Length: 354
Image 1 (cartoon, rainbow, N blue to C red):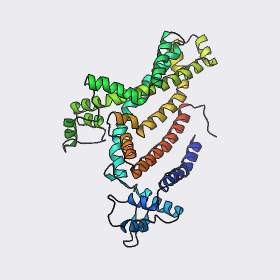
Image 2: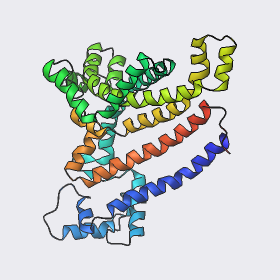
Image 3: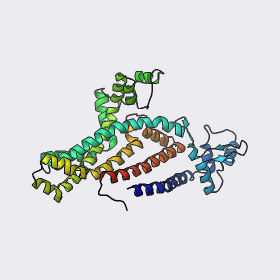
Image 4: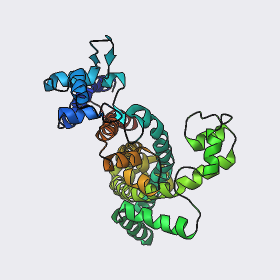
């Protein structure tokens, strides 16, 4: 296991290089003047200003040279200082977010992380519980009902389910509003007396002993959490059910039953740990997907996270922001896959990586 982890860590830089090459390849599809306009906050009115930017940043140099400058930065011939560079955290200026892309991602990421945190808890726990219940009650009315529940959940598009719960619980009943916080709660959050430890409003509200802020944040989270959780319950339930049925047919399960082991212990201690191996892998990848930003859900509920920022940037043709979020998502996916592979080996001791 240690040798496998070391090999994966050694391969990781190569994977990251290919990721950056792919992102830069999309950026290089633009002309030098189109790329030059991405380096400035406002398009200069002087016709020669863009030519100066092209010359300054080497946007008409050969592609490998441009990639190197984009990756590590370029030394200014006048000041001698190195400017730009992905490795220096410079992803460009976001016209959509009115700031540097790195700063905008830093502001938006806590909202998406908070949504992913609260959505993953019911998504995984209820999905696995339903799957176990369906497998244990194979082919009876409980199994059939849960299978119907999963088919409906898996078939409904995200935007349809999101709009449906928004119409019912906000437009009609007025219980759970969109957004992230109410206006009065946002004023409290921005007050210097309120300490933002994590910028996850529910967590910070508890740390500041403000239960009113916590409840207001939860009211805004409930609908997007239900939308994300229900649409993923279906897949996790079907996966858990299939895996449990396969494990329950194994010889060691039959042996345990023949020895008089209680059925509850057969399920919990023998079948479930082995059935959860593929479920843990898929569940972890789902959580990684949530961290990358759920575009449709955040857009429907006006939730100011990574997904809504990506959607707004795409609609505004803000190429720098789109590529910046794409690069961040690729990095999260690469590191997330590494963690999932390592966890896979830890959970199942039978697995030995050669």
